[in-house]
Image 1 (cartoon, rainbow, N blue to C red):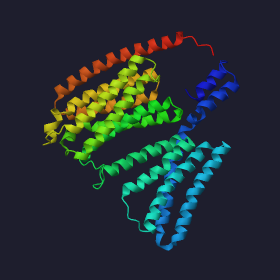
Image 2: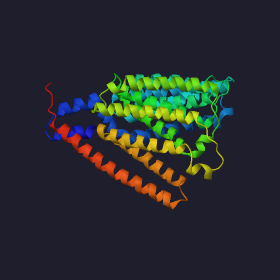
Image 3: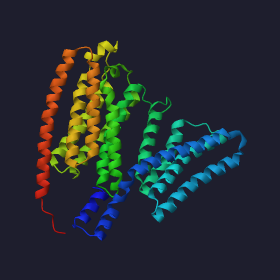
Image 4: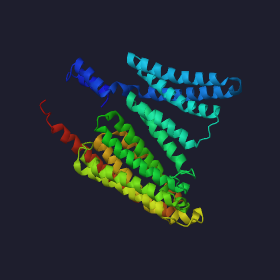
Length: 394
């Protein structure tokens, strides 16, 4: 549902202009129409923040210490004040969002500036954590999706730095195996996104879920490569980290998600939950199994990755079905992208045997044709079911 759909309802005579305005304002649908402008604005905010940092750095030795601090703090405060003023006026919401993003970027620049001026020796993860502490509350205060996504990204960067910091209690080692931790984190975010969508802060639900699903697909993709299983074993402390994250993920999906009405069909809510828990098991499979890597030729035809390929393939198909049930183009498109990626990856790992590859394509193609017929019938059945549901009296 977006602002265009509500306008069509008004034009068809189902609602009046006042009702249209109330619906758009309540669900903040007017912001959806500015999505492209928001993306362009975010890119502009990144460039402006980076440009200011480079300009200061290029003239570093010629600028007095107090002037550096004064200019940096003034730019930071000015960006947020300008964003607040524009947001209150309601005339330029995209520009207000951009100014707040510039302010968030300048906050990191100020952290680096203070550390360099006063020669404060600090661990890089600490600086990123301080940045996260400043951005995360701002997302909730402003009710900003862009700031929320920025906070999630900063959290991922901080976690990556901590996992590779040898003096950290989060030290993970085994760089390749870190993908499994990010896969678990993505599954957790996807569940939290569904929960947030039904909470007092519904605007944060969809971006959190999308961020989590995207991270899950990206982080689990290395499981389809035979070379992945030749990476080093993880450090002992990593087991506690991964175990705690697994418990939190399983708890969210079992205790919260099946009770939410995000997916109309209760049976499919449990299917989707079981699919996510299956990915948790697959992540542990990739974390614990260490194969012998000798050469590409050895691992392209035989190896544990041929267990991960069909599992992730099936997960993409389930996600496409869930996307149809929820009428979410994003879920379907994301599933199709990674479905194609897994097919191409499998093809290249089987490259050299035309007979094997041809047979795989025939079987997969027939399966996809049958699945398409089933999903189309399911879609029509759902549409008919929605059509006969009578509206409840207010």
